[in-house]
Image (tube, rainbow, N blue to C red; front, side):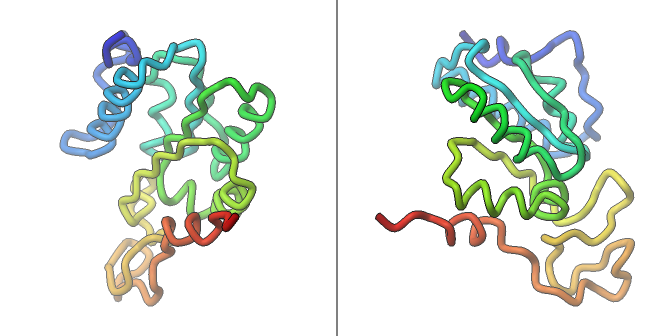
Amino acid sequence: MTYKDYIKWHRMPTTWCPGCAIGTAFKQVTFVLADMAIPREELVVVSGIGCSGRAAGYFNVDSIHSTHGRAIAVAEGVKRANDKLKVIVFSGDGDLAGIGGNHLLHSSRRDVDLTVVCINNGIYGMTGGQMAPTTPKGERTLTSPFGSPYQPVNIQGLITSNRRHW
């Protein structure tokens, strides 16, 4: 199989804006899937809401476009229902670290066998560019015209803080 087998070509071109990195990340994931030679019937992609959440519809595998902030919870349910499946979550920082942050935290704590691809652009991009949990301190957005007063959520830090120490 090649990376092309993991893409729904009849849905092209994507709705992503020209120059957006989501398309690049999407294609890189298909390269990895081809390199790993994962059969499509053993793979499920789950996405949330937002621009990156649209990726589920472009993968030529079983997929679920879940509700806002619930991609991790849905993916964990899929994995628990059939442990043999490879489950990938492909979503954005607003979806995964904002409303879905609790699911991200506890799924990592439970050490669920999921692959999470987080497109971290530091804003809620699809809805106009509002401040997100990952917006850098001082960054101006639609909802923080004087700059974000907060330190951004450290997604990697949240996940790695839950590593099991055996």
